[in-house]
Length: 579
Image (tube, rainbow, N blue to C red; front, side, top):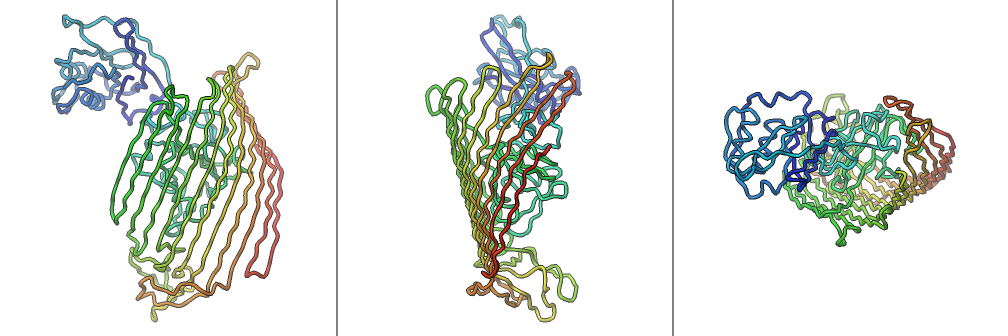
């Protein structure tokens, strides 16, 4: 495999530009890569400052390419076990390269599109004459891992059609694996906080609300399959770990074609990592303020000699305290997937995605902003409004399996089934932040306590076929599919009578609730089935028309019991097409 240094500051369109195939010495070496072409780079004949310390030749060439803003592909065997001298001063690119390559038996020549080609000298020191060099276009694919890119070549969240961001007729942002790693984006809330157009509201220590275009963003997909999850206002979702995902695709605006019965806010598609045909892996550890520690392991590769069966395992453990008094949390993550090529055109896969998040000293609500006389409160940044015995635990397990069938006419059929079970349990005890407000004169404040439990189960099936077809002498694209989901939600909240405590001497010590006399119990069953289709019609090379429709049958039934005295049946049935 050849290597090339990529400059992340270059225009995104150049990341999609080229893969270089260079035949050296009668076609013995094939170098394939994805170099950048610089639309506005300075001429390579212009002198510029370089500062490259003496090092092995590979590292020196990569550092030089970065400073020179050039593409420099090469065969790693050419530079193996070779050293380069230090380079400091002003040179043009050709001079700088020749100085670095002194004594290595190598030279470099500028080729087409500003790509510099590295090759050996002949035995008498003369430059070898290259045979014809071909440059072949190769764009980024959907997978972002290993691309070193902050963008992706294609996305299908909006229409299920594999379109580039430029071709997608909606506002789409992709947070890639590289960006998540570089910026330390470890949770869904952190990812969405870095997504343009998304507002993240942090309600308390556990709960987050996400908004897009003024509406609650609560449509989530996993690998493109719409799947129920914890609501954004319960603990668990916003803190979901990102170690297992290749990228997050966020569509802003109505997504009725692919998600439920549609929402004016948008949809979030979390795309999991997949097994690789070559072995790769990493182990990492980190530590930080307030005794926060994290370990992470990711292993992927073939499970058989020919690579027909592949597997991947990701595991992570994180724990730590916080700047908030008496608050701590720990998280366990496990992801495993196996993938098998049943034939040249058929691939089956199955996996599990497990996450557990436990928090102690967790709050439910915020500290009061005002005293009862209307003046502002002045609590310390570290003050925790929760009792020391408060906790919030959540657990999420997803099982999934699917099959992909490819046909000779470039059509693809994919079927995936999944089962998700999530539960969360909370013991709450918190100073009331929304009134009645604390008394400034007496130092008295209201304290509430209680318990909450959620249990959610969802079974989902998604099947679709997509591919090109010919009409009126031109090639167009079509996707048709169905998805079915069957879910159940059980919710129970029990509250104790409110108490009065001394907030001025608050040490997070308050009586645990024992008499839970007030409660709310909800049970819901939700069934949804839908058929959808999207057509990308191309009347000319420069014009595409995308048409789509979705027909949904949605049924939600349940009961709500308050104070164990009243049961209110609810029914919400709808059947309507969406465009």
